[in-house]
Length: 291
Ligand SMILES: O=C(O)CCC(=O)C(=O)O
Image (tube, rainbow, N blue to C red; front, top):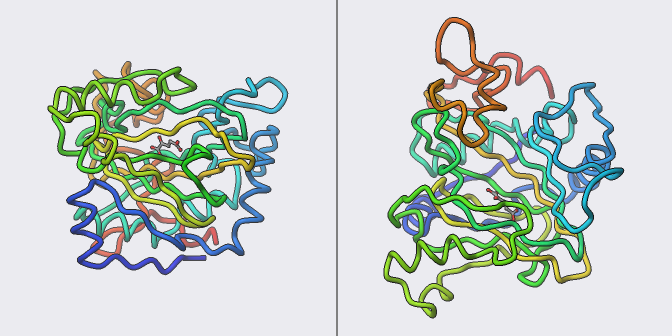
């Protein structure tokens, strides 16, 4: 099952200029029911493949209801999630936007922000990714519900991928002032309050729409003050030719994903970080037999 996403020159220019691209119709609406069911299963601890996702940060029985529910690498546990995350067309689109010659899955994120749930703090994805080089990233964020600013949708800051990269990190789950770290970096860039406000773009799309963003684009999201859930499936993609940096395994999410290092070298294992698409036609063996 493959989507038919095409990226044109104008999309590429916009992505390069703004650090993101908002797109409707990333996913057919006929796919939504099975993905909503997959979210129910994952957060209820039902792992269809028998494999536990790499990070299970929220479960129905024990989770704080005020937080956004999060699971990472749901694709290893659930086939409907896998069909989206391992789709060649998303890899190809990311290749077209980034100019990379091959694209791998770094991790996926299964995010569910119910009405009343708190914010997700602003951050830059690449600031957490010292454990592999080059730590470039492109993220595909797919809304599984229609999104609104009031409903705590993703917010992206125009042009912020070109700000100086101070590597600032803050709390991800439920910070009081979710824009604060980004605001501090913006101030150091010389942006005043009103130009910054004009630069913050909420991703307001129909269910199945979403965005691509650059690894250094500042982004985060406010509380869900609406009455509908805000579910999103996120693919964080890295270049195909990255290598581990073992001396940095202690940083960011390195302690979790460094465990897949091979005994012989610093190459990333395609069973855990599959190659979705390459200019030369290469795709990790086995992926096309799984549909
Ligand atoms: O969904 C959100 O609000 C945040 C998602 C995020 O951090 C990301 O897609 O990189």
